[in-house]
Amino acid sequence: MNDVLHHSPEEIAEQLRLLAEQLRMADRKDLLLRAIGAPLLEELRIEAAKARLSRLLITKDYRFFLVDYGNREVELQPVHKAVYLLFLAHPEGIEFKRLADFRDELTDCYMKTARLMDKEKIIESIDHLVNPLDNAINEKCSRIKRAFSALMDDYAASYYIISGHTQKHIAGSSRIWYERLKVITLPRELIITPNFLDKK
Image (cartoon, rainbow, N blue to C red; front, side, top):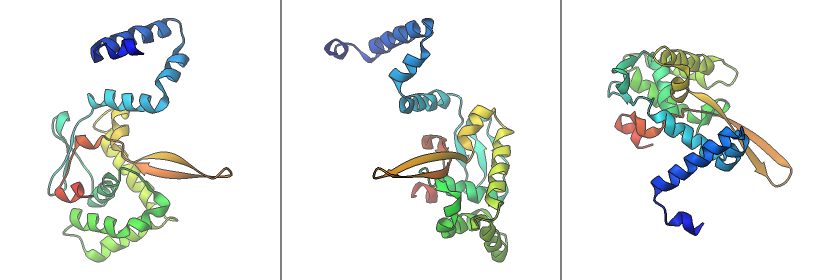
């Protein structure tokens, strides 16, 4: 261990590369995975993806552009943009069944993206979105997924879409429950947003 402390990060990285290659040649990727650990592997996956991902610019008039993909615009209706902005503002994730808790925030997003739309129609649409018995939120997320998937491969798109993430909770020794969160996993440093999102 003390020997490692006297090496530069570059030298340590080279040692890791050689050791990883030895395990790969021995067909022991299982040991390599165990050594790295799943949380670090996910961090490495995100780091590797950054080179392939574009910055997402959201303009003051709420148009979405993929800056590093030739400034291609992601074509979405105001309601889809409102849903997307809500999830961008909550990197911790939101359960669909608890969307009603975010009703005011979602309404605020929709009012911004649909300034010319009748307020009653906006409220009616919000009612559908936050109703856990309505399929509206799933339909909107599917449309968002199609919009991004039309502009990039599925691997890259997986970072931009609203996708599922199940989080396990344990209370004491007997009670276990799961949060079925929906999140946008795009690293937030790749998102260029209006000021109101930066304050969330």
